[in-house]
Length: 256
Ligand SMILES: NC(=O)c1ccc[n+]([C@@H]2O[C@H](COP(=O)([O-])OP(=O)(O)OC[C@H]3O[C@@H](n4cnc5c(N)ncnc54)[C@H](O)[C@@H]3O)[C@@H](O)[C@H]2O)c1
Image: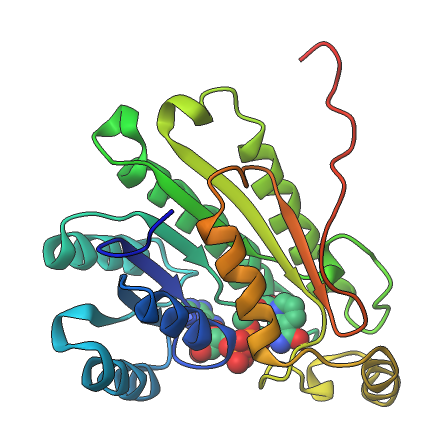
């Protein structure tokens, strides 16, 4: 899919992976609405992108994805500025085992609400043009080995299950939509703070042992998904040891 002229909404875009995803989309000709709860940083990132790619190509909206009304306002502002949505990236997330309820609200409920609102705007059956919805989970969302982040793992399992479930929806083709789940392993961003885990010493040791992705490796996988017209249902993992891989879908339930 050519990204020229497409419109994207990226949550958690002020820094880290969301910022890098936004720039990759801008470089390929898309317009990007950057949504983040961090206001000054999100504005600074957006100004940086406007200077590089053009004032009309990037828009910042302050948005806490755990708030229905803030998410709704974000979609309203995006549509009034750009008139369409083709690429939805539910990326915002935190890792804070000491505040599990907040983590569920952001990592899981935020993704569910962001996806459902995007479906309403993007579905061809509702007047949209179709497109792709990518939800950012984690390798923790398909392999429950990180004993130091059990609640985070739970939220990411939720994201993977939710996204895959949408991809099996028989009406997806008619809607013109694709759903994919991006599952990076440890990646060099601020979220890798051992203090957010239950066992910081173990977390640090295991992270170093497994290895840490550089951001560009994850961006390469991300762009592959965005551009692949056949990616509906894809669950892509990206690890420092094995790079990009696809998680095999289990057999579909035969009667469905
Ligand atoms: N870095 C990793 O090791 C890694 C691995 C697997 C998955 N992930 C996932 O990638 C995504 C991006 O994380 P990152 O690594 O770039 O971390 P990061 O901390 O650098 O970026 C997270 C961004 O989300 C924003 N955010 C936090 N709460 C928010 C809220 N309520 N509403 C809107 N925005 C909010 C932050 O302000 C920040 O800009 C997360 O979902 C994370 O779980 C990260």
